[in-house]
Amino acid sequence: MKKDIEELIETVKSSNKYRNIHTGLVEHIAEAELNKGRSWKDTVKAVRSKLHQVGAAYQPQPIHYEQLVEIMETLPKDLHHPAVKAFCQQAMQQHASTRERLPFLEQFYQQLFSPLAPIDSLMDVACGLNPLALPWMSLPVECKITVCDIYTDQIEFLNRFFDYFSINGKAGFCDLTLTIPKEAVQVALVLKTIPCLEQVDKEIGARLLAGLPAENLIVSFPSKSLGGKVKGMRQHYAAHFNQMVALFPWQVTLLPFDNEDVYLIQK
Image (cartoon, rainbow, N blue to C red; front, side, top):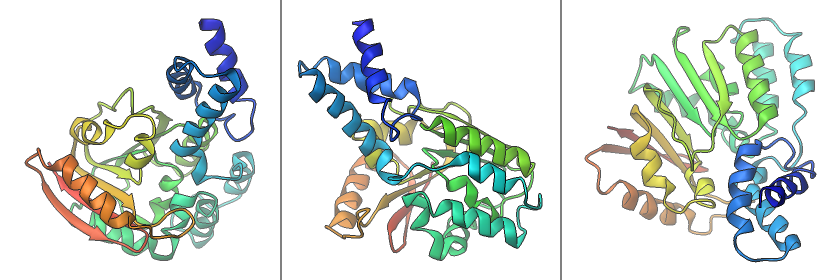
């Protein structure tokens, strides 16, 4: 079985699309799919399909982080310099989740964070390239930032980004369906994350929201597909979210935006 798992992981990651996904997540999904009695070809396809749904769909083209680092290291070290903000915007264009927010980035974070300011600690789970929106977040310079995702090259890039701009931040790997971060924070971002995680674990939503040790959660769901179609998604996810939080005595505020519905949860 161990040999089968190792071979399956190697086969799945031989594709450029999945090469930089952390081996721990690939192994977790591979173990589950290998036990379903399918052919080898169908098992490889099933694992890749899950990985696509979890994250790869949001970046259909490889992001060349080494090129981003080269450009970044020519920039001023002022996070709010116009050239730095332009760089961040161009980089965020390469990830579907952050690209959708670019037209209203400043308004987005002003509405989310102003009721909670000042924020002294922020966590962003399944962060994508969202940390590059820091120039628009108006956070105190001493704010401690912890982010995590499934792409090893992305994690390395974000740590370089934090270091270059002297940000009090750290990026790491997380498979949220197995382990929920234990670090207590004032605010945790869970942006368009739960539908992706539910491709692996249907029960993860409520467990993640209850388990994150944050005073405030900012949770969002897409209102349109990646192709821009509405498909009744707003109503579907609203009902799903309300079911998830029904058993908890939390204060919940809805903040609707064009491409996503955002919920502020105060525990």
